[in-house]
Image (tube, rainbow, N blue to C red; front, top):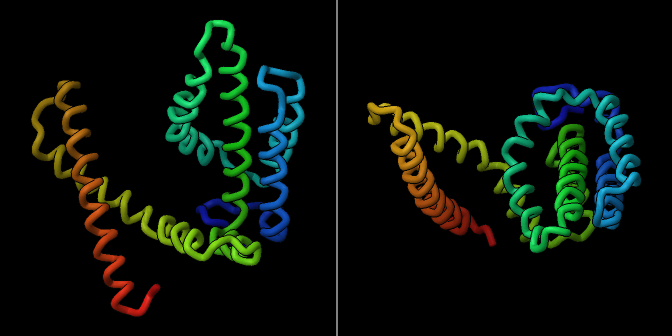
Length: 199
């Protein structure tokens, strides 16, 4: 069995996808129900995840590259709890909880191919429209990433200054154009699928 990455999933890759998904959901719910302030109870899921991490042989680089992308959103959500100065413990608890849940999902996706997760969700009577949306999203993420790289290279080849303001302005323009191209591509794909009888 192969994982969805270039790394071997280890012994955990041989477990049924349904069991891994159920265990991940239970752990996420348990973490979400823990106290809203830093508590010694947080060491329990952290220790469990550390043992599972070692068992799955997931490289640190695999986790780091993904956390760098997601962590700004985690911090932004945690900042919503800072409505009062005394709510600082809730802020740190939110960061801890979010990262524990993210690590759980990373372990799940590292050891379980995405098509197997879709099969488990289909057997769990998840709506077909949601499953189709997830499948298309994962299918076209590499296309979107490649389109972004192409646009950044084109923009860099036309920019002859390294001033930070110009760089950030260029990135904003690339993001706007990428959004427009993504919407246009999605519309064309939808029309092509409808022409082939997809409902």
